[in-house]
Amino acid sequence: MVVGRIKEIWRRKRRFPAAGHERAGFMAEAQIGQLIEAGIGNTCWRVFHGPRIPAPKEGRCREVDFVVVGPAEVWMVECKHWSGRMEIRGDDVIQHRRNDLGQLNHGDTFATIAHKGDVLAEYHGMPMPEIRSFVVFSNNNLEIPDDVMERDDCFRQSDLLAILPSEKDDLKEVGLSKESADLVKSLETLGTWDLVHLHGGKEYNGDLKSVSNESGVIHGLFDSRWQYDRIVMNTERSWKGLFGPLRCEAILSKGGEEVKRCSVNPDAEITIRRAGKREDTVVKWRHVVGIDLLSNPDHHVIRREP
Image 1 (tube, one colour):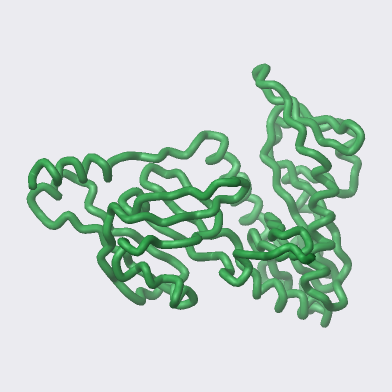
Image 2 (image 1 turned 90 degrees about the vertical axis):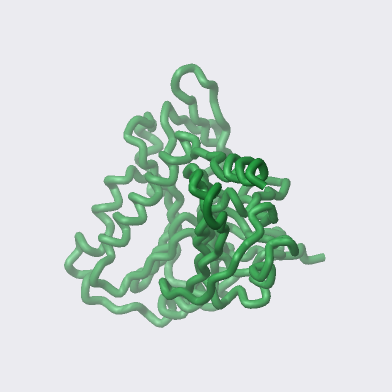
């Protein structure tokens, strides 16, 4: 029994640290989000973080870093935290990475975010405010050619300050038009990615697809998915577990209010379809520290039209 406990504690102590570039990208996007939130404070403007727009004809959802809705316009905002040097060849955006790490072809980055505006208009299916799309480059160490910076859809992070309503007195008191108000209602039906937090700091964003039967009561999570928006795992990882309860407990909440607690089998699994990955990712409950349930399950499977 003691040997079994030692093995289990050892498994629970495994750490999953976030890669440096992942951490930097998350922080940069969070900073831009905070900048936008501050810049629309005390106005009618709305910002939606990471909405995923169903595109049935493409058989997928299209994620946007930020959708900002103003009185008579909507911004489709894509964030890039690249370093090195950038150039455009034809329609393709090429990033030359630092330290001789080669180059990456990101395709037509500017056209991609513009296309997401078209997808949003199709999903909304009603008259739209004017759509404006642009890419925000948050890393000042990225060299951007002057001719690219002159584009209307290319911004540095500092450029956002000049267009946010907090900097324009004539925009502060204006209310949303009917088209903008209707669009807000549509955006409120969308979800973003679920976010699985692992012990050690790594995060997986994607769709939480399933909870294994062996998990315990929490296996029925999807039958009552809308009752919760966060799961916090209370898991004993210290050597105190040798002499006391070796708990692995899920605390489920909604809007910051605890709804339910239940024991979880630490050796059971969850399956997540991660963003940008072809194969599903399986994670043991013992390695999970929390899950943000942010996606709309109705949009998990979108079939191509014949």
